[in-house]
Length: 94
Image (tube, rainbow, N blue to C red; front, top):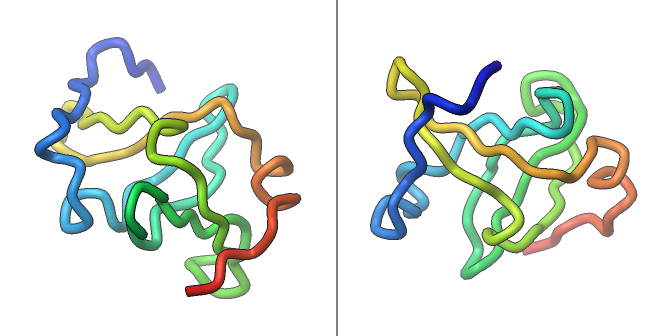
């Protein structure tokens, strides 16, 4: 996916209502997870699993993600993390 034409979200748009459910893309545009919820300045990403079943929730700083909207208006995030790096993180517990 070419993200160059995607519009980055403004700080005012970085709300749970907008971010939750967003697909997270890693290196080489690999789908590495989806945003489960926002916890303060942390974004909890469900990594692995299938359709959220068996996924591992991990928390990363919101600054580690670049949120944007594609041509269809869908919100997604891009990060330099890989799926394996996220899987190796401790599981987030609320």
